[in-house]
Image 1 (cartoon, rainbow, N blue to C red):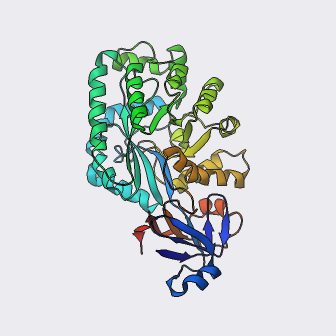
Image 2 (image 1 turned 180 degrees about the horizontal axis):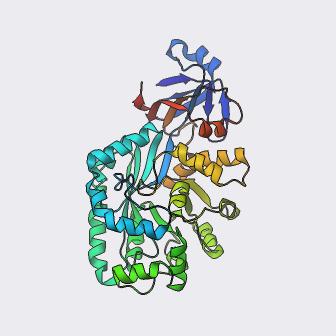
Image 3 (image 1 turned 45 degrees about the vertical axis):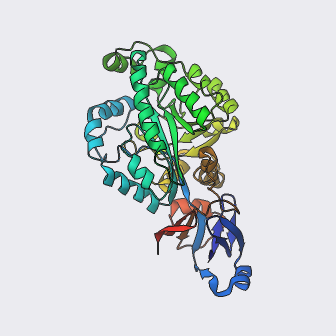
Length: 405
């Protein structure tokens, strides 16, 4: 059992000064320091001035297989970026072996990420994810819009899914990703979602990331038209946006991006109990626009933050992601938005991924960061933690120290 006494405990919705926590695998209590000293005496570990205990962070959406990218891909627009991915895909994947992926996972851990949702296109990151110290929701991605190839594509997807289901460890959750409405045929979507329902698997999908996707799904025109005609000999979209969302009616899903939705589509997301994953840096680098948070919130749709992968980001750092979002959504009240962003990488992300963590509260897994700041702690701590990042001294996952002294 651990008894840590801090300058402050930052829960998802409160700053508790001169408090500490008691935990083993799960959190037992959050209690004033003076009470803990009286009860436990020398068993207490005094963390000292500037110490802040907070929940471990949860990165709901990351692609690890492209972690070798630094300056290879083209930023500024979605189609130039996609073309550069197609041209450099094999080299980037070959350049990131198990060591590369393991180092990327360790970098996330050092940045306080104690759980993540990994979207895997090829299964090359399976071994590193299965061995990761973090909780991992491992989304095996299904892609393919050619009905003539449906059986072969689904067989490949099944092979990867079954391989992940064979990697059993506590905190590793084999799951399913449907790439997008423009890239997956309805036959494949329906088969995969049927399997997900039967086996209670988590599900994610990309949706409405770019203006090009909007034009292609609505009108079969725009920048996607030559791409699909040249690469896939396909002259119309595999799905309409509304039909695509209809397949997920009984499967609560994490939809990534959702920058260009229509009102009817947001209503369907609300009805389905779905979650939106916001990736602000990726959206900016690919020229896709900005998620309309006010509109999302008007529908009472849960949203969370993710980094996307290093194919469309320069770091897998949720502190940086939240900071960029804090400035990107400039019309929102600053402190309110800061709290919402912290919710998006803790309690709300845990709910969306169905994990028993994401908050400092009794009976939740003790996924905890011990951090330190070099400035006075006050009611605006959620803002200051983004503007002047803390030092992460220790990381605990289910009560076990996995990083730090």
